[in-house]
Amino acid sequence: MAAPVPNPAHPTPTSPFRLGSRGSPLALAQADMTAAALMAAHGWPRAAIRIVTVTTSGDRIQDRALAEIGGKALWTKELDRALLDGEIDCAVHSMKDVETIRPDAIRIAAMLPRAAVEDRLIGAASIDALREGAIIGTSSPRRAAQLKALRPDLHTTLLRGNVATRIARVEAGEIDATLLAAAGLNRLGQSETGVTIPVETMLPAVSQGAVGIECRADDTRAQALLAAIDDAATTRCVRAERALLLALGGTCHSPIAALAHETEGGLHLRAQILTEDGSEQVNDEALLPADDPDAAQALGRRLLDRASPALRALFQA
Image 1 (cartoon, helix red, strand yellow):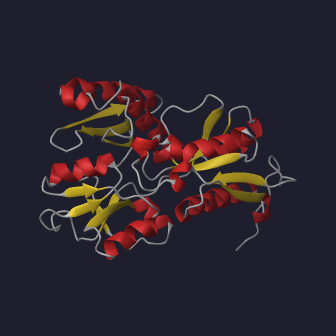
Image 2 (image 1 turned 90 degrees about the vertical axis):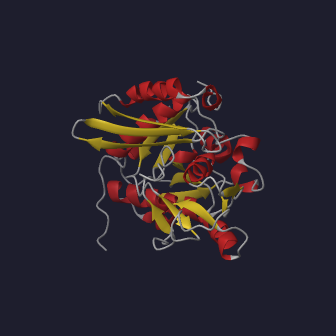
């Protein structure tokens, strides 16, 4: 492998640039991806970057649904504290785990190129192939609602933990199947695990497949370093999906799916909201100006306008 070419604008730091990360295998794989991107962009040696592992509440508490114990903040609050206290220079996140509204003192400075956005089914050849009344392990209200919309006979049960833990529960026969993000499996070298569910069958979660890197809003050096690894197309698409989420007022209880992609005419955004049992769903789509992904909020309001009172009650907009 050729030696990295130094970047005169951002020479090798005298002390390591510190990347904060959760300690799960997937989180550390994503931190390694971020480190590699920084090394390539700035010509740094590996010693110029240090990965700092931060244990989050979401990692410690595995027996309850996130919505019952604090929502997505359980994945971010300890990393936020480490960032604001100066213990790390940036924090690496799966963007689907990051709250819609972030503290003013923290900025999403970059996103890596988005990976596969689909879900993968573990335990059966297809959703149709699941036995009558099959039990599916998931902690995602979206996945649970979408499965029940497709197969009202299916039952879901809470399943949390890292990828290996979830797969082991299926292999042990404790549940019939589970769903995992294809991007995470790929990043762990398990691209052959499970069966990919097309987005036409199950639209993914907001920001699924995207890795974001945050830094302090007043840290201009970190912002400049991270800007060099930002994938602009991913940032535009994820920003549109998060703007939709903001307009919906979605919480960890709200089954929401969305996916944006760039076209010649702008950003094409598809979205879906569902009741928890999948008995009602509202789908819509819009073509947004590429330079104004916040226009996605209008699509969110349109979804709510078409929803029944019972479905609207799952949202806080």
